[in-house]
Length: 60
Image 1 (cartoon, one colour):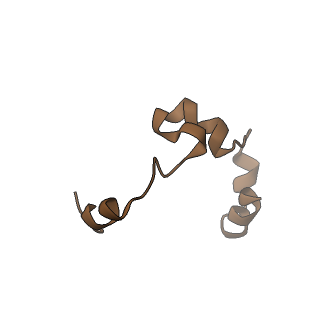
Image 2: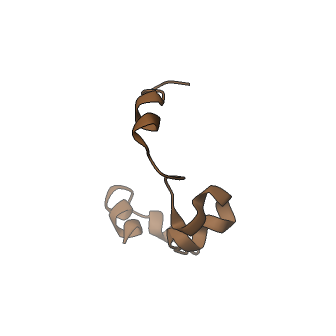
Image 3: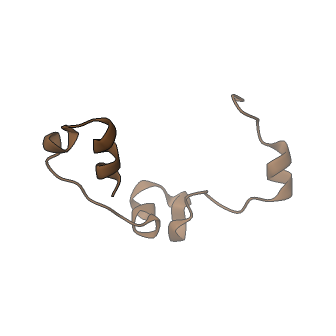
């Protein structure tokens, strides 16, 4: 569990957490963005054209 891993670095943090929940990408998608349809967190297909024409690291 992620909270246990965080506790290794920030001891006592677990004592401050009152509640937590988990959701799959498919379940979370419609509540966050219509672009996440079907749990696609990458927001669509990655075509060769998109790969070449996207901004690089730090690009606008």
